[in-house]
Image (cartoon, rainbow, N blue to C red; front, side, top):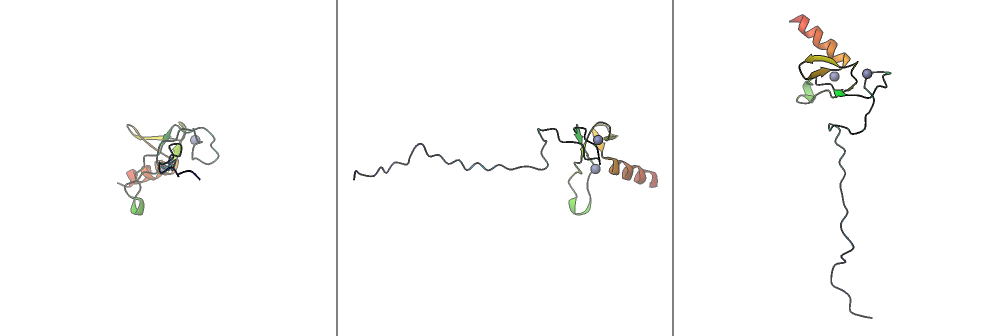
Amino acid sequence: MGPRSLMSEPGQQSLNVTVIHCRRGRVHTKEPCSAPSCTTPHTRFCDFPLRGRKAGRTCDAKLCDSHATCAAPGKHHCPPHAILTLKENAAK
Ligand SMILES: [Zn+2]
Ligand SMILES: [Zn+2]
């Protein structure tokens, strides 16, 4: 038996690449809009600020052009949140 090589094998590299799927990240594949029965690829996300336990986050519902309601310049809301915003603005 020859002497064992004490060198670490150069061909064996650690390939423990951790792939983290960030749910809040922008997706690369065009997933369909979140609206029921809508299959149009989404173009934006709902910017509605969540409250309570999820405060600090946004709804992030996937929205196509026809389901995104412009709430403010650069801000868009999903249909349920657009209605909620309208009701709240009307109540003020
Ligand atoms: Zn849609
Ligand atoms: Zn929303």
